[in-house]
Amino acid sequence: MRDRKEFRFGELIEKNIFKNLSFLFQGSLKKFKAIDVKNVAKAMLIISKKKFKDIYYNSNRLQEILNKY
Image (cartoon, rainbow, N blue to C red; front, side, top):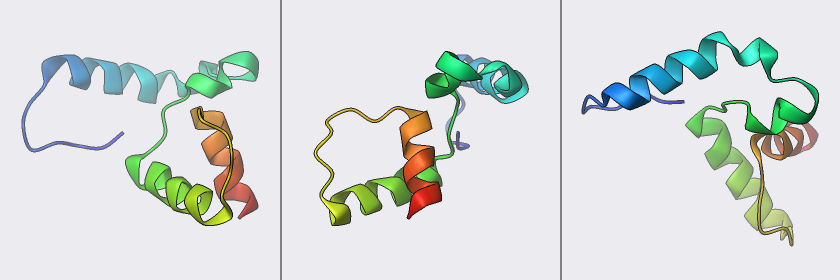
């Protein structure tokens, strides 16, 4: 979830949908919740430093990592 210099109509619609309906992403849908690009980058740094073995990280897992470390 970050603004771009270039305009992309589809991304604008998607961003607004995910932002305004984020409260619906609970339980098993939590893994699809939008996450800010800065948080993704922070989590990636933690993952590389801690040498996690997983291949795939959904947004819920990234948020758990950010909260733990």
